[in-house]
Image (cartoon, rainbow, N blue to C red; front, top):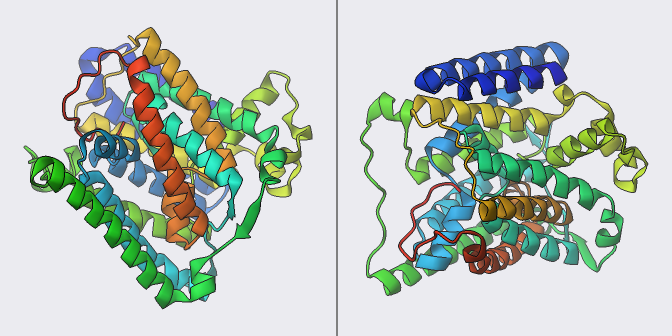
Length: 415
């Protein structure tokens, strides 16, 4: 895996050094590494791992072409009262619970055992989600947004990703203290209420949030924002984008459900970033294996094994490569290393907050929010509330770091 990552870095630098043919080169690079990653995962681990890597690639392509950014959707609603992105998320979640709840209620899918991301409803979730929310706006993306924008060529988001790993590692050094804070324990709507009542309750909540965004948007603007028209149609639009937000949400849901079927649990992102940070620390002589977090059996195994065996890591690599392919097909892969100092500081601070908050909250916008709510976990709803509050604080702090932001309507960009 180390040689695979080194080769990927060398190829990435060759792309940067050849701007004239950058799109053509990056299409080949993304395609080659998707093939190599698939073959490697199959050889070292097995068919399921290879398929999960490819699902990661499809997730990256979907996130990029649909610009499905949780961070920008929330910022646009907070600042401008435009709720198109939030409504797309509610549709995505509604379809997700419709698929997930029956399978989780049965405890199996296609004959294989499955379990949801059901975690404690606790003070650590509230604090972690709030911190993560601030980090979203300063770092410029959520967990999935950071990965796909890095794959799409954003050098600033690469800084956010590096410090996302740093923040995750720092959090693992004293998670035991945070997890000892008051907690109600894991609470599942599917287990407590049953599949049908849980579905109905969630549908009502999604509808209420969507209607609230409609009310706010009409009150502030008089009408709802419509989906921008694309210059491409048909198969060309599929390859080059952009895709409608609704397409993105539905495809993400199907891919998350496929992850549940293959991995036995839903899609997650940030546990791998803690592993990456820990492995990097070990390389420079910091023995994190003695920390309580890394002595837990599953975490110790992830730290000791090659990344080929870590499902979340392989899917994350797939996401970045899928986004690289999508950006290249769209002719938009153009890394820019000219990062203003204040923006760089925001990326560092935001990345640390993202990583630290995700560990406290048992996940991010994917593991806790998307997959948590899809799993019927009450902690997912708690995460949504406090992360949204944190985003509000983050939006207020952004002008300190982004002096060129102008008071004009923003567009959904995935950042």
